[in-house]
Length: 391
Ligand SMILES: *Cc1c(COP(=O)(O)O)cnc(C)c1O
Image 1 (tube, protein in one colour):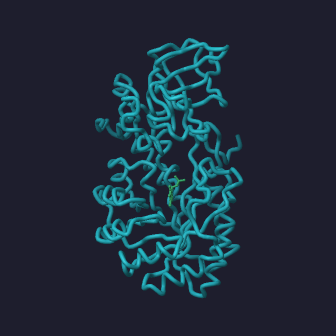
Image 2 (cartoon, helix red, strand yellow; image 1 turned 30 degrees about the vertical axis):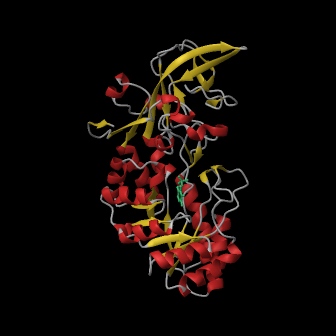
Image 3 (cartoon, helix red, strand yellow; image 1 turned 90 degrees about the vertical axis):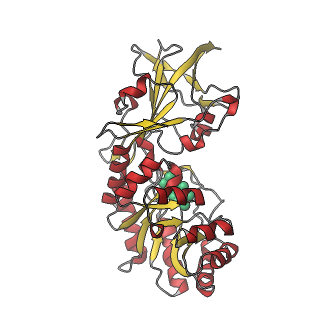
């Protein structure tokens, strides 16, 4: 591992409050101290950027409140997320509503809550915003080619206009009485290529020249990674690559930068404690069935896209590879079959397994009661203080 690469704390070394260890599983613990550290690290690596936390990564009220206290702003993708951010103390003027697929009624309600920054990638959406949130600032989102496979969760073709159409859309923004904010994009979540921002930054600079006026903002989206089981480039490497691209394409007239990190703030703050339901040897393979699975919050294990670190902190002895599956009667509820985590050979039903780096895109993905199983419970703690109780 090069010294520039960073790695998550192994799950057995993460601060899991003692009370959690005796409580019913599965339970996700979120450590607010780690949320603050992650936010601070991003602010330190990108001192010129305004940071808007992508609420969908983990909308726990305590997470939003601690980020508000740290001066963070919020990127919301629904009215519910906007309300959650406001309840956590954020001001409407510090929210952006930058998904490009919104109902007119939701745009209007968000505007009434004080939201003044939106995004669009089509003429239809621009006209909706003009009608429902007059005078607002609007980003035009461009598509990013993320087909190279360097992002664990690419956005594919769902969002963003072709860069060639962006200048026209920005002119339309101005024509209908809205304020063109600039270009936005998302390079794909858990983006491991530090150069992935180069192509959309180049496109954004071209678009600025095409429209002929200065665009005040440039929204670099999310994509900064969390360290799961593989080392990932350090934030400083992302910042260096992005700064080079900005220098190359914008020179001395850089727009104000916006970042929308979700995963990089929330993931490493979460640890899930779960229990082994069964260990089975079948056709020469060792299967470990946990009481948390694909439908209990670990949706990002689909196609083994995200490989969470796991360990059994209370079981000693040698380790061996296992297939890991969830508890439901669904045949797709297998977490890892290609990639084989190593768990103790002595592991038995009833033992605890700890899954690290589960703070982002987990609790909100858990189903309400598939197979009659309750959604993943979440407990928010602050490792610098005492436990704050669970929900
Ligand atoms: C989900 C999302 C993000 C957060 O992405 P991460 O990869 O988790 O950082 C940022 N911006 C937008 C518009 C999103 O939809």
